[in-house]
Image (cartoon, rainbow, N blue to C red; front, side, top):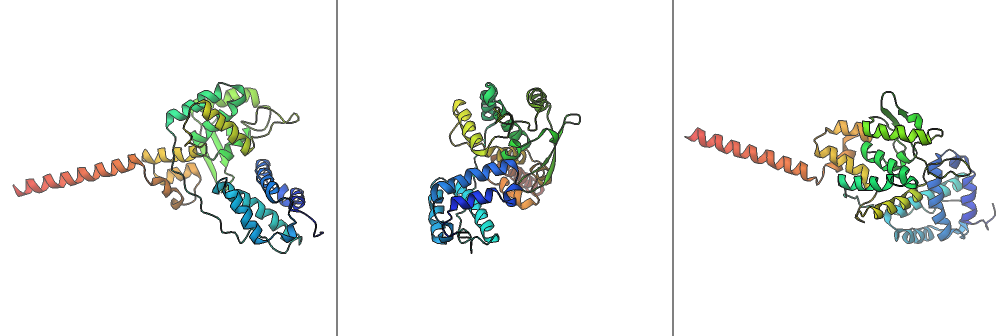
Length: 304
């Protein structure tokens, strides 16, 4: 490889690699989006002279658009440079020395009526109905939006009303019941989109082929629905999985049962959802006060 090869050239080489080819189609789309950010900011740099200091400067630039966003971009950039090192195009990966900023854990949850407002708007227009279905499945099943964007018809058992899903993040397999309301929606959806692979693809095909929503397109269109529904700007679509889990916690669902839904491998991963829920705190204090009062009465009666 020539020393004159740019980071843009390296990205294009990566797109033709086996490493990239083995990714899921939707993951490829996400990588292309984030690597597009890399190309826009440092793409013209010669990758052989791209130092750790330059990588840190680029990362700080991306952080202005959000820590989570910057970390995703850095992850994709790092994977490209790992490929370059493996192929002996580069001596080192400049992104490995970056100390990434911790992402602040969001605690925002949706009210049930806000979810209904979103669905009412989304389902009222054919161009956004599949966004509505993705959100309904995300909320009802407490799954990640990414997995619902790429859900396939073969994952759904219409006879037994069961979803079998291998989660993309942890590769955990979950088996989830399908409610009557959601099953009705899926039957209607199958009439219009059952001829192709995905449950809720982008409603406009690309060269005659239906593909899942790309992450950035889904987020943009989803925010438009939220604005039309008059929802608070504090809410994020990604909060819906957390919302469902917090609701289960508030209802006293055992952690092991919640893990069967979320696909978490250990209790420690679910414990953050136990924090700061009013229902849990209220129940705990009520039980404590009842216990204290009961003991007080017992002591008084024994004294008399």
